[in-house]
Amino acid sequence: MAPLLALAISIGIVSGGWMVIAYLLGLTGISALAVAAWPAFVGMPLYFAGGGGKKGLGKTVAATSCGAAVSILMVLIGNAMSFLGEPWPIAIGVGLGSFLVVMYSKLDMLSYIPGGFGGCASAFGVGVGTDLNLLVAVIIALASGAILGYTADVWAKKLVQEPAKTVKTTSN
Image (cartoon, rainbow, N blue to C red; front, side, top):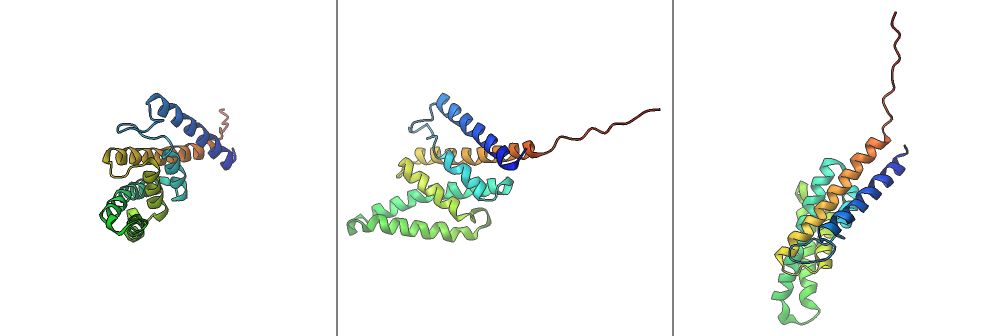
C-alpha cells in the first residue's frame, strides 16, 4: 500500500475513533472535568511535525504541556500589570511568555518550539485563564492527540509493509 494512502486511512480511523470516544465520555464540551475534543487535533499534527516516533511523541507531549502551562503565567503577568491599562498588560504577559517558550527550548525535551506555542494557543483557545483544572484538561487532550498521531503513524507503517513472502519448499 502506498505510504500516503496508509497514513490517510490510519489518521481517518483514529480521528473518527477519537470523536466517538470524546462523545461517549462527554468530552465534546468544556467543564472542570471534561477535555475539549479539539486540542487533540492540535496535538496530532504537532506529533508528525515534530518528527514522529517515540522521540517525537515525547517532545510533543512535553512541549505542548509546558506551553499550555506558560499560558497561565502569561495571564498572571498580565493581571499583575493591569495598572498599566490596555493593551499593555496582556502584551507584556504574552511577550514574556513567548520569550520563555523559546528560551526553554534549549532543554532537549522541550526543544520543540512549535509544540510549545501549540500548547499555549490551545490553552488560550479553551479559555484556561488561571484555571488549573482546565489546564490539566487541555494537557490531557494535547497528549491524547500526540498519542493518536503516534498510533496512526505506527499503524500506517504496518499497512505499508509488504506481507512476508512464502517460501515454497519441496520435500523429497
